[in-house]
Amino acid sequence: MVKRPWVRCRRHHAKTGSRSVSDITSVFDGLTLPDGACVFNPALVHVAGQVYCLFARVYNASETAKRCAPGHMDRSPFLDGWRGQSTNVLAVIRLSSRPMDAKLDAKLMGYSYIGHTNLEDGRMFKDMRGRMFVYLALPMGAHPKRAVVNTVSRVFIRCSRSADSCSVSLGFPRWLPYFGSPSVMDKNWVPWNGTAFMSFSHYGTFGPHSVFNWGSYDDPLPHTKFDAVAEDSVFTAFARRYGKLLHLAGGTPAVLEPSGSSFLAVGHLKAHPGCFHPEALPAWVDRSGPYGGRGAAMQARCDHLAASANDTTRGEVLQIAFDFRHDNGTGTHYPLDYAFFLYRFNATPPYNMTHISYGFMPYTWRTAVDHTGIVFPIGLERFGADDYIITYGDSDQVSKALLLSIRQAEAMLWPLAEIGRRLDEYTVCALPCEGEAHCAY
Image 1 (spheres, rainbow, N blue to C red):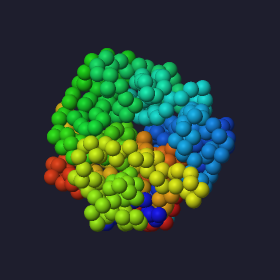
Image 2 (tube, rainbow, N blue to C red):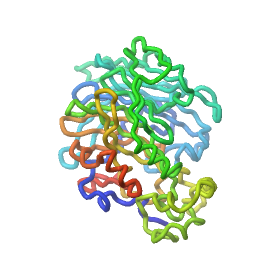
Image 3 (cartoon, one colour):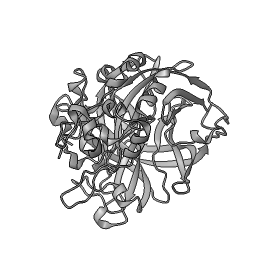
Image 4 (cartoon, rainbow, N blue to C red):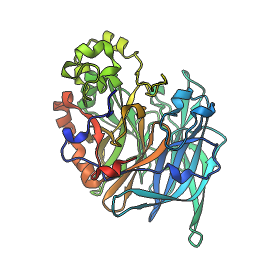
């Protein structure tokens, strides 16, 4: 059994790290949520001062034994087949950072449980007038014929300074009218904070950077095509090299960087687990070079698989499920590994992407048996003058926050041209904290 699910980033990128990792799930304790509910994928937007608003998913498993419990990370909804109840919660919280270790403390100020329907993964942002919205791709129907309707809804907050409490509610949805290719109707559109713009990330290639300008979220302009498209051959080359082994997609909203000339966002990377866990693909052990073999050291790249088989063979092997299991035989690992990546694009037309980071996930000292493969970035905001908060769901069970300094983010970004020259070196690794104790969760 592999003792660490990922290779640490500093082995490959010496100047990188994060400030802290914090589990903020406890802020939902005591709410009128279903007993044993998982609360995860917490979208985030800044309200004022230390006050932030969250929009998170809530899942209550159909079987009691599969419901979430503090201290357990083996209750992912995929083990329940998503047969339980999916709902959402909207909350107002106060966030503060501990001086000694940069951990985040969250205090609940008010909430609204949206328990009548499944709104899935919302993204929170502000428009150009500073009004708060949730972008939602409302699910319609069931797999494999499920569709989505893309909408935005106002968020209304009223706070009492004397009581240090707030009420929060979700307004009616406004449809984002798009009449072009059905393949664009997707939940991972990327709102640009402080604007009426959004990006679409193309599945399989990520680029070209394709942009909608809705004009205003009061009455979004109808679209049959994108308002701007910025081509870059790097993404086509990336997809051609890695195919379905590594897949880049949208994640968080984009926020304007301090320079005012560019936006930063966090995408999510999906990878076949055979890229990083040799034991996931016993049939390919002999093709994995020095990394192969049972109990082999973890690796941080997928080039050995990308270069080792033709498309037919690779397609067959991709059907093999990942096989980390507890001693009692219970499977624990999702069939894909998820990670984050940062990307930057210009704030002026045609909005070219200029930089991208390697793939990374928070390093939390957990063993492979505790790791289900899912970390999903969904919120990005500034925290004070020098930091970013990335909020994410871990294993579809808990809500967490990664505190990353502006300096640390800058150290992780590579110019696209440099990535293009080094596609075979593209790394996915575990991002350490400045003090390892700060990664205890």
